[in-house]
Image 1: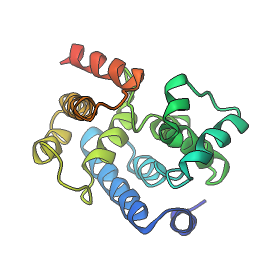
Image 2: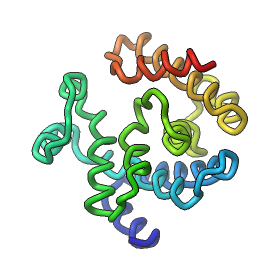
Image 3: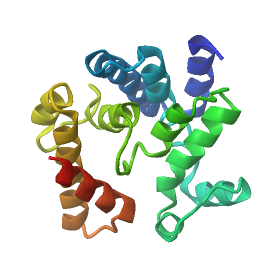
Image 4: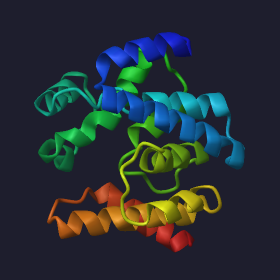
Amino acid sequence: MDRDEAVKKLRSKLTEKRFVHSVGVEYTAGCMAFIYDVDVKRARCAGLLHDCAKCIPTEDKLKKAKKLGLPVNKFEELNPDLLHGKLGAYYAREKYGIDDEEILSAITYHTTGKPDMTMLEKIIFVADYIEPNRKMIKDLPEIRKEAFTDIDKCICHILKNTLDYLKTKDLAIDDLTNETYKFYMKQN
């Protein structure tokens, strides 16, 4: 499927705000790909499609994931919104014709990250956080600069802010997010 077809399909599946966000992630991922010597087309594709399952109603995400035979951990059972990454990878393959495993993995892990990410996975994780349409959040200008100068430091900064935010709101934290943070803290 070419980009125009993907955009048309995506526009019909997402809210306007989510669609604008997805195009912002596509743009940011493409810019970051230049810096980190990653194929720009692949980065843009992963960025555009990363949230293709985001607007599935929360109560349907768990049912769909189980019906499709996707692995669901206990944390995702309690927080089905996190399944939009796994569902997104499934839909990217089945509905948008993406068979590039690294793109699919970048979509799967764009929210939690994972230890030892490929550069494309890192780019999508970071681009989702820093894209131009994001509301201003703690340290965002600094994080945006780090994204283009030291991506691993940037990942640590994003994960620390995410974990701090979840703790102050007394929200549950996915084990994978903690594992990812510990992995990248050791790297820096």
